[in-house]
Image 1: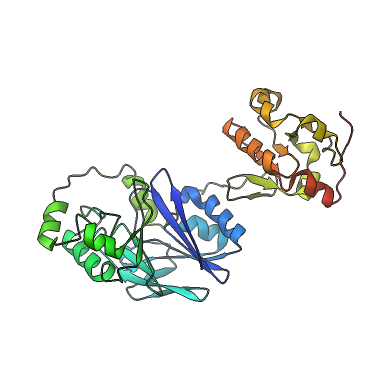
Image 2: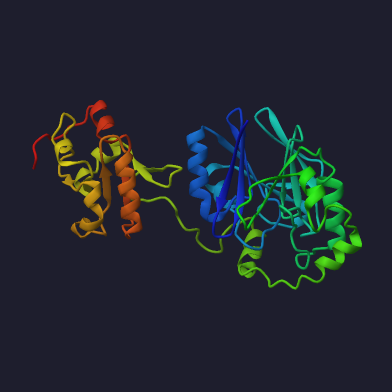
Length: 353
């Protein structure tokens, strides 16, 4: 089984990818991170079957709708959440298959009325959303929250799992990535040890926390499963057919670049001797060694697409990052660099022009 834990720094949200047999599910995707998630799925050769939200989030917008638009995946969320746009309203006990594996749905309300925990088939892993955080738990003072209900949910549905079961929350604000049932039974200050429902309720009712900054935006959007109001923004450049790599770099295939050589700026970031070696260089390319690029960006038109090139695509990928950070909005890296360009038989210049 393939497992990846991904992170959104803006909201401290963890997104989880589980794959098997070429099929995958994503738990708690983030709207802004959809290009990243699609790139990873592509690179791992996985078809996204479904997105699974643990609850209607108040601190970020889900990527569920955006992923459905891009990949055809189904949206699965608690039936109790009342979210529109869902394809699969989930109930306690449902199974979500992917490849030869599956997740079991456990209803764990209390943080919100529609909270779910997803448990892997062999009970080696569980994804708890905000119901149980690492040494903590989600608040219970809005979205039909209830401390009594959350206490029961955590003890009956999560801490009842085997002690070795690894627990993965929806958030952690300290950078801790995983815990276990045994650890939380013993060390969770709110829900572990000898804490009873009275202790827990008294604690939760006196937190006096401010509401999440994005609650007024996030909750309505997540009740639409992340569907924007009005026209949805595009995240794919339209000046050429490009592929986004998981590294965050857009790449252009040699054939696509060949067809657009007269429409783009080419910056070759190799050293001068490489520019005229056996691989040659692209017609019209400007030689700017990577070490000089930051100081020579004013030589390029910021409104015209720019393609970075090197021997194999490694240095030019870094050049693409530097150009993007400098404000160039139409940047791509030549996939495979001059090595692939020559292997595929495209023409190259060898003079030092």
